[in-house]
Amino acid sequence: MNHQSKLEQLIAEKCPEGVEFVFIEEVAECLAGATPRSKVTEFWENGTIPWMSSGEVNKKTIFETDKKITQVGYDSCSTKLVPPYTVVIALAGQGKTRGLVARTRIELCTNQSLCSIIPNERLDSDFLYHFLSTQYQQLRTISSGDGTRGGLNLEMIRSFKIPLPPLAVQQEIVSILDKFTQLEAELEAELEARRKQYEYFLEDLYVLEKSPCKPLDEVGMFTRGKRFVKDDIVDTGQPCIHYGEMYTHYGAWATDAISFLPETLANRLRVAKHGDVVIVAAGETIEDIGGGVAWLGEQDIVVHDACFIFTHKLNPKYVSYFLQTKKVSHADKETYTNGKDLINTFKMDWKSQNSHSNKRRTRKNS
Image 1 (cartoon, rainbow, N blue to C red):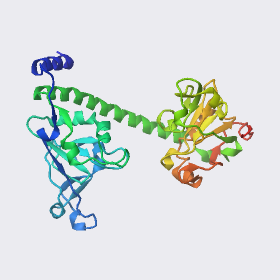
Image 2 (image 1 turned 180 degrees about the vertical axis):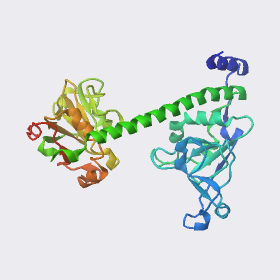
Image 3 (image 1 turned 120 degrees about the horizontal axis):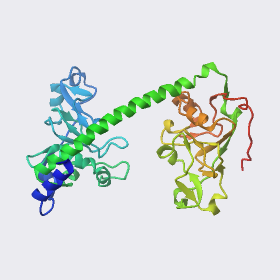
Image 4 (image 1 turned 60 degrees about the vertical axis):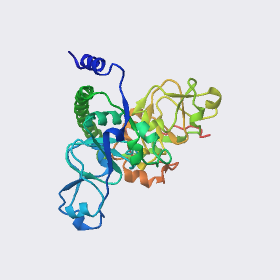
């Protein structure tokens, strides 16, 4: 009998009238943590008590913590030791942390930005972990404050509803999902190894010291895109690239767009042609800036004003891959940026690729 048919049989047998939903507080205790004063050395030095910070929810399963506190540090604040097989949820945190969950495998205490959920005998902790992992967006939605700076609190967690099938059903679901979790971990490890291999060869192939270098504006020309907004985007029409899509959708090169503009609007804007490289010129962080997409589509593509169109006679993929190297470093970008925007004359040392590299193509910048 496979897992799916066994689960279906269990649900039919144990839940003939459907699955009950309960508030978390009905089947678990919810506790907040605390942080000993960071400047008091005796609270931290040679500590033996595992202490978890909110960022560590990204580990998903906690076998150890990054920091430990001393007994004196523990006694100095209101943090509480919680047992193994507790579910921990981030009440607050930087960026995407709020609403993420982890499960513990050791006794530990936490900071004040984490809620520890200790299930009773009716609730399997791993079942709760897997369910709450699917509720990330909902948990962020109910957070107090606005959509980016809000926070969860204990009352929100206690009043959050969860399904409560019989334990046998919970445990069968956990068994199925844990097998996928293990497979996911193995795939992530393989992907990370391949990513490091890719980065090694990428850097090795662009050894600039062995070849003459030129500023980018000596081997091509920059044209800034023109402004349009997301509300202008339609289902069909002229292909376009919005700068936000540069981080979320496009890789080193593309032949098809995911967004379109009405022809009447597109005719007033600026386009990249086949072989041009679109370079993102703004972002939330310095690291976001400077990435390039070689446009290899047959149709011209409208470019957002937070991007540059780089027109050149080099191999377009060569250009975009170069923009991924460490040569295009954080320090280089800070040199040529003003806050979070790239200035109009974006220059970096550039490896000359062929005999045409010092010939500039021109385009009317209007």
